[in-house]
Length: 329
Length: 307
Image (cartoon, rainbow over all chains, first blue to last red; front, top):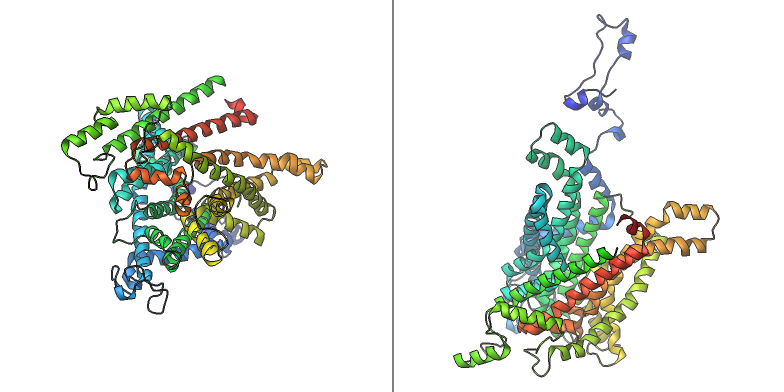
């Protein structure tokens, strides 16, 4: 029999039968101890202790060594992106023309570029640029994608149809092409890159959200909640959102390095960040022009970019394995 | 089933129309004409004449209607930048190069990807698996221009084995194909590995082994065939990406293909070229997806029955 206390979520203690009233003797009283579910978890044996879904996911994630290493590296990267001046040796645009075109040395760790700027410092600020573009774009993508997807899933009918047609057209247009076209229309610069990346990018999040909502709407617990009179807002908050988050997290963890890669690629082509602001892609392009004699100009930005994206990829893989273990590893 | 195919074809046409509208609107929203105002300042009458000769002074909807008519008759117009040839001639020159690069890439990427996937699945969780997984992950995660410059640095400048660019002899093919194939190879390897792992644990394989089939027959008849299923689904959409040429690889290695001229034509506002490349690419994507879907419909009886 399932105790009604399970639904009431009251703190439950061990009920002891009073010796005088109900039990025949002390032994019977002890045997009649009724311990219900939270009490059971206070046992000394830890394996019986209750764990949350997120706790288990985090444990699975931490067991994955490459993902953990990637995460530590990413924390460092975020720190650099937040306060580059903490790690930088020179100013961002500080140009010492006398020292131009130098290779790596003790003073200039990664060498200097054509204008005598320290490549190491510029890479740090380039990381800041990449993270800025990545996080801003991803935040906007989340708002627009989940917003539209949620609207389509919850409203249904004509709204759903209209949004789905829009999604179809946007999905058929290759993303990179569309982004390049938009950059050509809008011009280069940080703000325009974010706009040009957001406009074709919200589609996948919208599709995921809508699919999740549609499938969750048919589940028993949501239908039960609706039956006993819960408002749509309550259902959304309490039942739908916690179950939708996992695929969204996985999508975000894969899309963030994609955004960084797209920004680097656009800057490589010359269609990205505007000149004085350093960008890893643009530094690689500049280095590529001079690769024969000044290989350090291209190598270090390229290496840093590659490491950042790899770290993201390992973390993303780890997150996916942790949150959705049904997929074979 | 024929109705479904017709419906899908109509869908592809509809989507292409929408895409052409969007591209057209975007291109014509950029102020200025197809020449550089600073380098070539024109007086009022000259501007009008130039615009009239290119047909740019007509109202927008008329330009669009004309464009659609031309598109259907395969008359893609004159390039504004490459002034000595029409867009058709430019495609005839550049597309074989991009297509050849794409075909070579697929020929290399497919077997290598399958191989990596097989190694990863059959030797799961050994260091073979970790190596294969790392290679395939790095392949498709790392940006191609990073890999391109890295290989140029290593093989052309340090080791001096291979030329760093151009497209004259087969020696020039090696590096671009290698860099270009790492992406698809990585994707194919990952999908193969996952599919294989699932198949290896499935009931029908166990049954086949239990009833006494030789391991070779089990592998050939059941494992290989069923693992190939999702791989083909992924490989279909990869093909048009490659055939139209990779933007970054062609830029890094100075290959005279379509990809390299696309970015240039966008910034020089070469409208006919831009429209033609975009429409070509989207048509290819749509057609290949359609063919893949139809192929799936014919090959997998489970899908046919649910239709």
